[in-house]
Image (cartoon, helix red, strand yellow):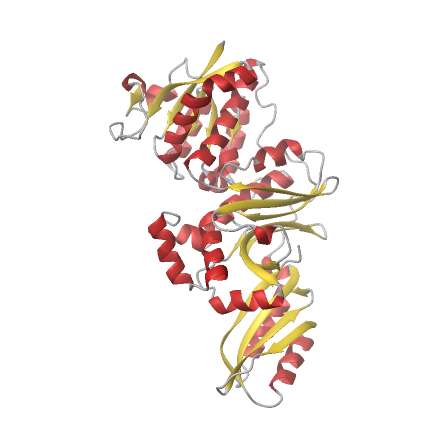
Length: 431
């Protein structure tokens, strides 16, 4: 059987998973597709630590050039991470005529506009299914399975750490900081968790998905990003009473010919499919104009899930090379007349959840309603909490409103002498 030789850069958690997968299922893959991927060389600065799997010492090296310049290696798998040296490695692999597979979402989000044209210039494949949602083949689905559709909207739970935290807050009433510490102890959250809890990891993936959906590499500038760091337990409880759950979503939406890209905590109906996704799992909900609504669910991170996606990409590169069809399915191609029509966050329209702490005095509700009405914001429901103190909570759910109008109205409400502290605003998506 014909073999396809794989050069691996990075022998960390995911790299170890890729090695295990190739060793365990290489023959199975060969039987299925007629070409067997085999591990030819692994480069890593640390080649002595026990990874729990036996590897021939002859294929281990600390010299990345041994992998990048080896004429017998067919594909380079970049699992180094980061946005600097990893980019250099990938560009050099392209120059040497080698296809590349990567799981590096940050690199793609920040430098995709340089990497994809380079792959095309050199006529090589560049695959990255593992960069979004781990083992869920969402990129392949969007790039190939849904190619007949205009993509109308995408809603993604892309970060397992945040989803775990929100699930524990919801189910067990545990405050954010306590759950975060627990997630760190369990290995679900990094010691420095900002990339996850501040929404940046989700934003990287949102940028990648938007680029696939609309055929233009957007980078990070058009993506509005908010995380869950400041989310209070009271909002989780209030949402539940109102028939919602709160999820950190990556949202990509075409609305009136304008493309939105945003990441933030979002109220979604409790009965919706996305609301049922709990713990560290990921899910992506996609609406196409022909297919309608589709949803994809699974493990969004971890050694095995990510390795599964990486090896699937290796197989695609192998088949493209065998049948001389490199660039058969490029990373993305310009295809939407709306691709340039991105919209600033201030101009989006959605519904809003607002919580205000106010003095328990007559006419307070009337004052707030007047300010909202003057800004063109219609109230769908309003609830005032009973309190034993002289400060009460008012919860407002709006009809569709423009973001800039809501922010102006909240600024005016905050200046009222009866309002205590900063109001809370969370957007609502009626999936």
